[in-house]
Length: 280
Image (cartoon, rainbow, N blue to C red; front, side):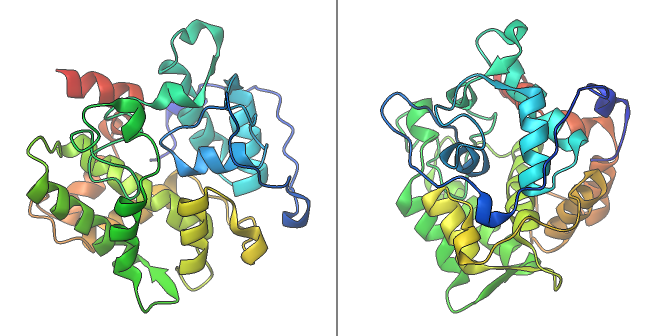
């Protein structure tokens, strides 16, 4: 995702970007009755730490930009794009906020061959059920890292592709086109870059805590990334994942690189666009 006019969406928003020390992160608490959550472990983790509203409700674009930067060192451009897409999926986008369960839409955030969620077919076509963490799905994916202390790009790519192969074999309604493929790469790129170390790998224990508990693993030693995660880094990670994945549905890594450098890639990452396209 390269800088473009799309990212001039909110250039003048007043931001308060405090660099929160891990030792000062709010305590983790699971959702309580009445709280809502999304198909996204990252958003859920931030809500469970009350960095986003613990209720999961009334989340605004400026809040996402501030929290993503101060906690995860994600650039304002990527954060604003993500947050604006979330608002577009709400029941009334004109209000300027969204609730986490507004994202419970198939082929928006949630998609087939997820790392930790059921395919919609296996969830009996219940979008809310498909959006929830599913331990057997997570276990099947995470078992690919057995015997490893760290996850690198190659093992992350193969583990993701294993989910695709499983769904392709067992799900008679499996949906996996260009849009879903890019969504899958993005899902892996986000968790990988959020926890990557200077050697280009991430601790397996961090990944487990993040997905299974929807908790930021600072108690295990994770810290806010020092390197800003912006559009160039996202594009680079997506390309590396594509090159490490033996998918016959994509011709070459150059095809993915071309996708990542045009407007279609931006649209492919836009949940509202994915819902619209899948309905056509």
